[in-house]
Length: 398
Ligand SMILES: [Zn+2]
Image 1 (tube, rainbow, N blue to C red):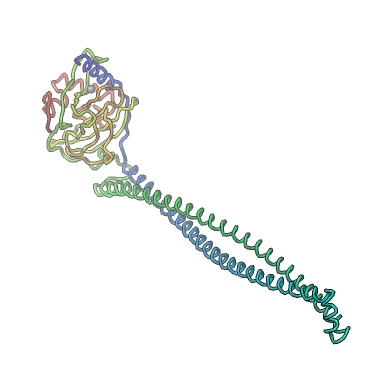
Image 2 (image 1 turned 135 degrees about the vertical axis):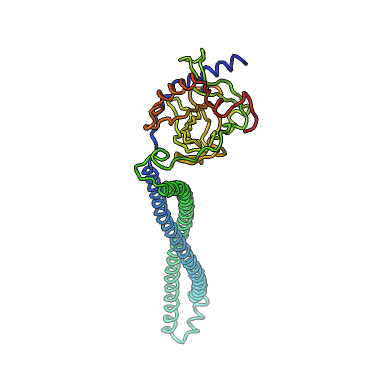
């Protein structure tokens, strides 16, 4: 266990030694650009929503049209069926008629009846006439039956084709409904995107308005050239639970023999929230080349002295923080972690009375100057967070 902690300490110390991060301050113009960017996103989303809603309306109209067409076809099929039925009845009637005629003709040609018929007839002419009429009627009936059968065949073909058309229209409706569903999904996505963009727009718009009120010009660096942060009312512990595993100072286990921060671990591990040690303004949310999540906060104390606090190895940032944000000791900025060049979950906290990465601060404008300054402060008896906040070795409340 002790050996493990020692390892963590070595690695942790190493990681902060090698931090070659570079951060440029945010200007008001960058916030204005963000506002314009999100406004454009919202406008684009709204245009897409309008276009997609037009497509949905068109698809719905096509469905209505298909429904009407199906209804018309269905009526036509009913008519065709009736016509087929009528034709069949007619054929039956004609068939019966022909049969009767044929029977009559048979009788007329039968040996016995023939004679009877001859004698029954007024004359031979009458007989011939009677036979001829029967023949013509039979022929006529056969012709009509053939025509009706052709009509039935034609109607059946038409019915088949209409049924096929109905199936196609039904399939078309199914496809259109699926298309509408997809389009509606797109609208929901676009609306969600627009809402997200609106949220972001509001954050940045508020910032722009606020900084303009503070007298910031577009080229001003926020918190540096204008809009100085809240005055520090008191220094607080950065976590609810904490145990110090290493303080600022000379140490044989560090590569250059020096540790620039205070290492704090918690029994809650990555579940431990990180808070600012005082009111201030977030000057950077960044990572180093090893992927360590870092937040840097500028403070000004009641005597006008400028400070920087530096929080390293976070597992995640709070989703609500942004560069330029005014924070209080109760603004949660992220969770404890072991991102970057570190194998143990802990917070590496550096503090000094200067402005890290502020070009106008001759003591701390670069990472090299910052570490040199911390070393100098240490030589004068300053132990970073341990001295400033009066951190005990272990605590379970802020
Ligand atoms: Zn450390």
